[in-house]
Length: 88
Image (cartoon, rainbow, N blue to C red; front, top):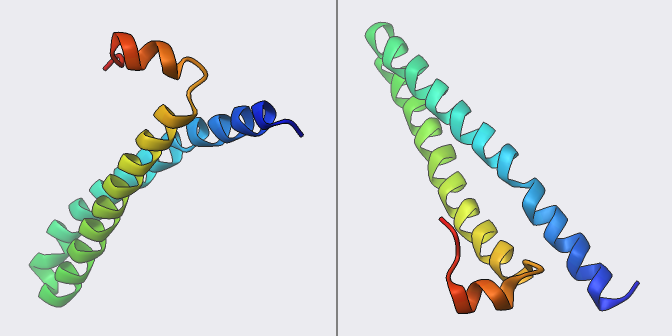
């Protein structure tokens, strides 16, 4: 496999990570909703669920930052975007 093929495959992998990370972020939001309901009946359970939601959210944020860095490093038009600026 050529270096170009490896880079292309790596870019595909990085690109495919976006939806699973967003799904996990959505699950974290759902857990926080459950936590707000649970805390009324069981403060400890609510606190645990809230902490789990926050941890998932924080991990997703870190993963998305790293994924974004790899996306830019592996992008096939990287030279162009580094000169012209990356689209938001």
